[in-house]
Amino acid sequence: MRFSSNLDLYNTISQNIKYYRKQRGITQIQLAEEAKISISYLSKIEAAGLNKSLSISVLNQIANALDVDISMFFNQYIKKEE
Image 1 (cartoon, rainbow, N blue to C red):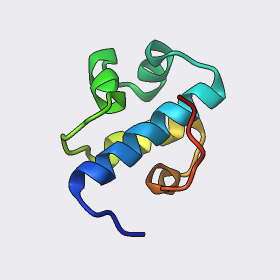
Image 2 (spheres, one colour; image 1 turned 180 degrees about the horizontal axis):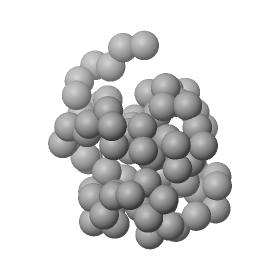
Image 3 (spheres, rainbow, N blue to C red; image 1 turned 30 degrees about the horizontal axis):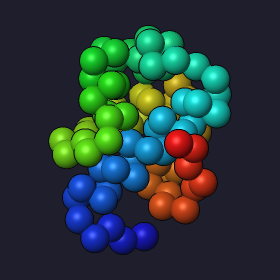
């Protein structure tokens, strides 16, 4: 998979985290607690227009909390809910 820019990469990751969180039916607070990150950090990660780097370890913590493979966060073809 290829991303045209870092912003495209970050937006894909952001949307996918939000998508899987909603699929699981949990709030940002619940996910932040399970992933052992702050709610403010998770909010920034899920926000549209995220342009900050994320560590692989944080992505792994979120993936584990959502019970999804970390590679799913990079999928550009998941149907998104508005």
